[in-house]
Length: 544
Image 1 (cartoon, rainbow, N blue to C red):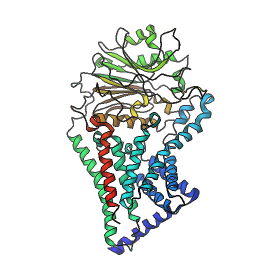
Image 2 (cartoon, rainbow, N blue to C red):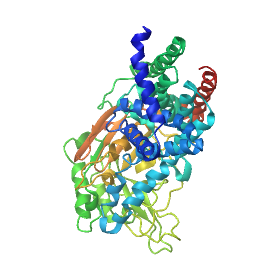
Image 3 (cartoon, one colour):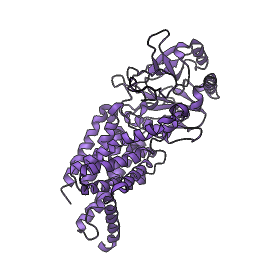
Image 4 (cartoon, rainbow, N blue to C red):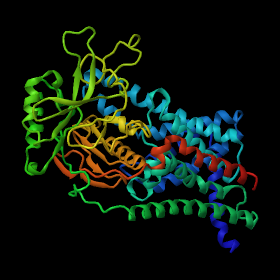
């Protein structure tokens, strides 16, 4: 038996030594390559198996930093280059947003894409530094990396307004069963177990080699078995949870009495605000709203800025929209909003309006989390530049997340664009809604020259997990896709794909009867698995 295992151990030991002894640009380039492999595990590719070489290699690079003159600096550099290679292919679609008007914003592409990737890479760099600083060995340093990585993801979601995009836990979005863990721990808990399991093969090269004590070799293989068992347990638990859930039925409106029509007009971003096309764009939404099947609809949802006018101040166009409101229902649409003229100074908001059959605005929500440089320019007193979105005036932030009470609908929490990517910050805890509504314009992520990007898939993956975390259905209306109705278990009930024009009709699913652990405690519930993983790491570090 020992001889049969020897070639495997020799190969792994040699691979670990080769990675750990890399120096200079070979070391940095290899770290960036590993980070890129980790990106391929995320939507839309979902090559989850690539997480194994990615995080295993990162552990070996951190091990190799012990040979450097300043070990902590070498560990940070390895983590930073891993992060840079990870984020660069994950956020390349930002360039497409800038290239919608290349004459004005094309010069920003290298600063926005490479600069943001470099800034986000600080978090994996700090995770690697903390892993080196912990002094943990063997299985312990794998768990230390998992804890540090998760803490850094949590910080990334909050520091400087936060940007929790492409969290590693979203790799499991292809499995309804696996993402059920988010109901208990949030997406960050899924990241914790994912990194721990993906990095665990690194322990197979912990010095025992083919000639090491058999007991040490067995313990290391058992560590891999245990990591796989944890993932298997999560899958089984999720499958059992789904087995007890009501069946998926897009036409069953018995629970809420609401049948929604989501309109996806598929208007290119460079056409959206052209003065000679705005009337036609509005007319297209009106036409699609009245397309076959309208008779059974109670409420209509249009995407972000689907009405490219200040309709709160525009009675004529509100009457046009009122003509397509279902009897006793509403049309809910995104539209810019501005202060009534004349005012000084003028303010503008990226808003959602609910319009009834008389043309009255009966509910409004103003976006709270604005995109820096996209919807406003930070440090404007220093940076004399235009924002990327239409108009010369920066958008103002709304007063906060809120629950809207609208006629014929259960209470709803509106989320505009990337507001849906923030775990634990999508509902008013003092006035909880019964469903989440995400309107967005993911046309920014695509380009008529370069085609469809990964951005909309990544965005949809984030929104879907919010439904699992909160135990609330998520309805999503996107200008170019992906529009969808997701139930409170994260199951996609109905979906209209990327780059398609049409409507999506479905019943509004009900919420769960009670609060999920994550909905009740938020990110504080993450402290339990983090503490357990940290404690286990300290214990196992005592054993070779």
